[in-house]
Amino acid sequence: MGDVKVLVGKDGCLFLQNDTNRVVEQNSGSLKLTESKLEKWLRILETRFAVLKNRDIKYYFLIAPNKESIYPEYLPSDYEICEDRTVYQLINACKSHNLPLYYPIDILKSYKSQYQIYPSGDSHWNGIGGFIAYGYIMSIIKRDFTTNILDWEEVKFVEGEILLDLGNKLTPPQTSVFAWGMVKQPQAQIIYDNKVINSGHIRLTSNKNKSLPTTVIFHDSFMESMLLFLMESFSEIYLLRSPSLDYDLIKKIKPDVVISEMVERFLIQPPVDFNEGK
Image (cartoon, rainbow, N blue to C red):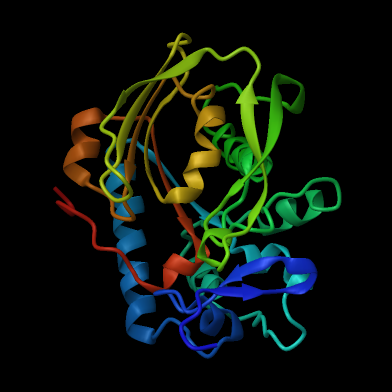
């Protein structure tokens, strides 16, 4: 294999390998969170929940499943998926500390017989997967806030064949079908975008309906297929592409809700929050 970044599975389905997060080793269970890293995660999350609760802000942590977790049947026959891998280490540790984490693996799996939710040539979910995850997390948030949740009749999906993150790593590059999500009658729009690529990307969104709650979202690339839907459920969203919370930023914006979104393979490295406890 050498340092080839793409693993070709059954029916030509592509998966990530030899990445900086060592996803293959995480999945097999040969790379796990150490006790010290697990303790660090618990301290980080305990602080987040406590500080935000003290500010009367609700906090939700959404974990996007790895593609391998949703489509293990397309992995090579000798590929191992451990039931005690990183994501379950953290979820189980947090349960014992009453720290809720939200991992929509079951609901995503329940839809995969109807829809392709992770493209064959990409490690991310598509617009359909993003919409399912959106509905999942918003159904949880709606227990605490009065808001709108889009249903399937209010959205549509448009497919096209493009070059995606895994297909782009092959020689020659390989395209695959991607489904983009759209809202049929949008009430919200992006009003600011600093155009920064990857870490540090900032966007602001505004909804015509000002009665909805406000949120700050700290996220990774999986948010891209959720954002158009989330915009319809909040009056304002401040998005920052970062695994870390910035407490000064939250204090300045004073949202009703803070959301963290992180793909499961990133959990192997606990983040460092900014201005902790201020």
